Image 1: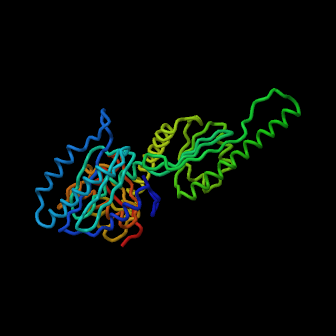
Image 2: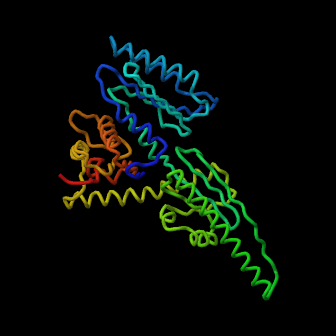
Image 3: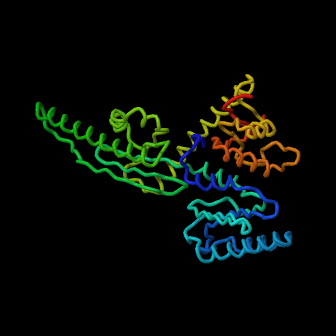
Length: 361
């Protein structure tokens, strides 16, 4: 999903810090990703895989590198036994004892598999993609007398607020009394919407929220939008139909699905923009070689990359996995926007990757 030049995302601090890690060939960096979802018996399912994998990798190191590796394994083992949150569904660890690195991330969302990457720098592609798959946004459920506001990030609720006001009732009065009552009801609704918008505006500003999904009925929507200032209305990416009392987990799943649907549309639009710029000889490059070159010159404004490394065109001296890692890490180092394109067809004809540029050389 698209991000601003310096996006407020749940993993931004980790990605910035880890992407600036200086490489060293003598000190292996372990990047460990674990799917920590419990099995049908409520137990973690990574123990056997981890023991086998660490044992196999240990045999490939000697001397100081082996000593650093063994210290990392001991620290990882201790963390998993003593500090890992039992409710976590995803666990990430970056370790390099020789360089003083030990960074852990505990997530409510799972990974598709377990991975251990060992290299001279942290392996960030899975983390950056997860950051893209589970964006930070606000979801507002509202009717004519109440509202529920959530801030979601990485598949979990970060904050929530409620607004409750006078509940108006239908009446059978007629004539002037009816007209007066309807004006009173209209005033109640207007004041309620003003309060809701004030709360939303404050939360969006304080939490640096860039996108909002609204859930309301067709009667409520015009009342809400009438009170919403332009800068806030521009952040509304979609409107879904959910009852005000919808359970929180369903609010998360359905608004996240709406975000992803809209993002798929944005992917197609942005790829078209990229291809148009490239064909016109303008601010666009495509293919791994040209994109890496643009990244090396700090030209890239936005990297557009296939969401699966195997879709990238192979390059000499680069496996597809290493190429994906190189592209994402360099973009992160330059605070370029990173867009993972889920539709495999959109970038297929240009090697799976391209970039919109800040400037030409």
